[in-house]
Length: 109
Image (tube, rainbow, N blue to C red; front, side):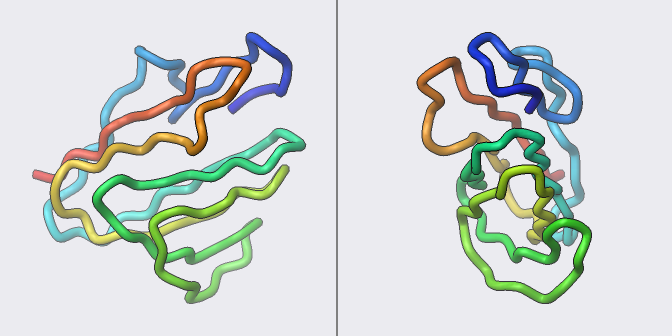
C-alpha cells in the first residue's frame, strides 16, 4: 500500500488492482508472505481458506500464534507462514471507505 490520501495506490507485490499476478507455490509447501504497511493506519489482512502462523513483526522473527487474520500495525511489516493447499484469496478486511481493497490469488500446484 502506498499513501493514505483518497486515490492513493494500494499494491500487492508492486502491482495495482487488476494488474496483479498470482503467487505460485507448490502444494504442501510452507510459504511465507510479508504484509507491508507504510501508512499511519493499521490494516487487517486475511487469507481465505487458510490459517497462517505469524513468524515476524518489524524484522523480529519468532514462533507466533496461528490465525486467519492479522492486524498489520502502522509502519510495520508482518511476516506470516502457511502450508500451501488449495487456492488462497488474499483480500484486506474491511473494505476501505476511500477506495477498493486489494486481493490476489496464491495458486498451489
